[in-house]
Amino acid sequence: MNVCTSSKSTPNDALIEEINLLRRKKNAVILAHYYQRGELQDVADYVGDSLALAQWAAKTDADVIVMCGVHFMGETAKILCPDKKVLVPDMEAGCSLADSCRADEFARFVEAHPGYTVISYVNTSAAVKAYTDVVVTSTNARQIVESFPKDEKIIFGPDRNLGNYINSITGREMLLWNGACHVHEQFSVAKIMELKKQYPDADVLAHPECKAVLLKLADKVGSTAALLKHAVKSDKKRFIVATESGILHEMQKQCPDKEFIPAPPEDSTCACNECNYMRLNTLEKLRDCLRDETPEIIVDKNIAEKAIRPIQRMLDISNLLSL
Ligand code: 13P
Ligand code: SF4
Image (cartoon, rainbow, N blue to C red; front, side):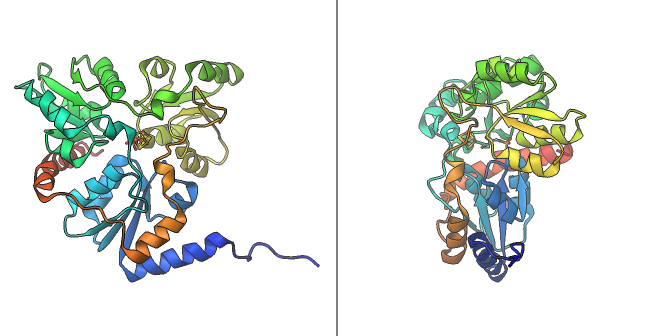
């Protein structure tokens, strides 16, 4: 007897149905970053890079925002929407880059450099944003830095790789905080060179959080959204992707006829590089957080009042530049 499997429900189907019921009942919007597990990206209302997530949060009329991403993304949404409930599926989903910049140390660094404009990457805590003049993401960092006069004295934190990259393409000499992302620093240049030899027709796509030596090998350097756009528009059929491997899900979805090869990390037998924080979120935890309305992001009122200004400034500049 033939069994038709197409209508058979899987464990995920039941979970997704629960998530759909809960999101309607609670008027919730589910936002997901490109580094999330594929099944979370598929169930989300919107999937995007960190700039898009902030932009969607700022304009949603939902009562509840569920941020499938990491803690700083939830904080940014909460700061932009103080009257909404902002939930994250797993409160432990932090960020090594944000952790590489403690607010008290950053405050001392800023105080030691009077007269400097402070530009912070969005991958920072709300407390660090409170010491910041303008926030950037990897999508708008270049344009925002270039919106300041050439001789503007700038502190850029916390990512030394993104800061170095922006310095190299703009000719600026921003003073850099010495932080980094443990995922993007891990890519093996030697293994990528091997892959390039094996697939000479492939473009190398790299996120600017990677080390300078890797960025020099890349055909395209950009944010997750920019790398995706490049893959969609390119005539090339094959890509070596040096960023968190979750982005391959959307790349493959938008380009079913193209091949995406994840760039491997240095000291692992695994062929791809995953962010252990991003991967903490699961469909089950998403269902639980919608049902129980916890864990909820709470931002100290005094910090939020200061941090909203540089975030809003970023959104306003991005809007003006149509980013
Ligand atoms: P983008 O989504 O802005 O490219 O940032 C990548 C990242 O590391 C998010 O944690
Ligand atoms: Fe942070 Fe790196 Fe993970 Fe992005 S990939 S959330 S920068 S640790």
